[in-house]
Image 1 (spheres, rainbow, N blue to C red):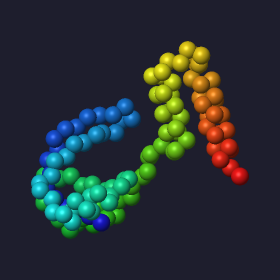
Image 2 (image 1 turned 90 degrees about the vertical axis):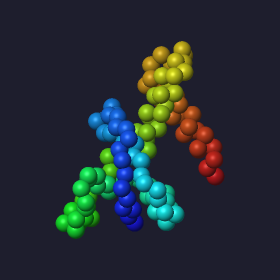
Image 3 (image 1 turned 135 degrees about the horizontal axis):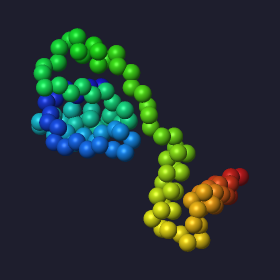
Length: 116
């Protein structure tokens, strides 16, 4: 799947993990381009240029390997629990590690209750 269109970078902002958020505005897109874009989830290949794209460059794009540097589901859950602990400032859990162990134990027990 691929969508080729002209676009304009409207905003760039750096993130804590040294990655970047880009806001890109495109020209008007056809219905099929919109459908293809909506089906692209996860990592995509993206080539930005203010020149025309020639065949040599398009082959390099096809050969590019995308590394998945996303966090594991368990790491994401831990980070979300940290944010919850941080926002709630739960007095009975002044230490995150104690809160984390308690929250995980509750979650494990809830899942175990659903087992036959």
